[in-house]
Length: 340
Image (cartoon, rainbow, N blue to C red):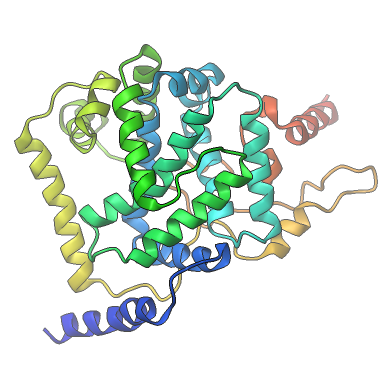
């Protein structure tokens, strides 16, 4: 009992008092501070799973699935595609909007997207997923309620990123964004072969760390299916799931939230995957005497969800499909010539 009281006291100091002491966010810098604490300190597990399943939702839209499947990255190189996406997002989510590496990550994302013909409505839907899903998951499976300040912060943070991506007609509030997301899904989410191919490859990645692979389809696939809303389940071609299974899976997540609320001491700092300093990024921009980036200056992840794609480090400008990353392509080509 004393330990539980201690956990509650620490949460009050670190989270409750903090939220009560800060004003409603009005700038991107204020929104960034609140978002960092929400996603990477208070709800690191829930927020990560929300974004994973949020991206999974976007594959249920035929126009988005067709574009993604055309690269072969999500079916043939699912782990690399996951890491590229996750690291790019974390670079501009884990660092202030004014930082050089956050700007570089958005620029790299824009460069990759420019290679494809993507409609504004699809851009806007994906943006809405990143705004809505972490809040929805935290409200449903989190250990506490979500503050209006946190909703506003997440909206402002992603609205700023959307503007940097030149997305038009961004809704004017979190609530309007949620309505847009739901309306879009009802209108455009439907089955396609591309969606099913990407879903199968992504499921394989999501479950890659689980043991007893021969039992995955029978016991673990239904868990993933249960976490998918009915419309997404149909769009992916997944079988129907009984209400009993859905309730059982959701109960496991509710048990997790109960455990976190009463027995897990709150984190005093955010758990980030990227390094914290802009200096680390600046060093990757140093060139050698002939104008090439030095192989010795790289960025490194602090942890990896699945296999370690970037054991030897990464540069922001080299994240994404190889054919769209001239710096890495030129460097790899030079390395091959050295070995010949």
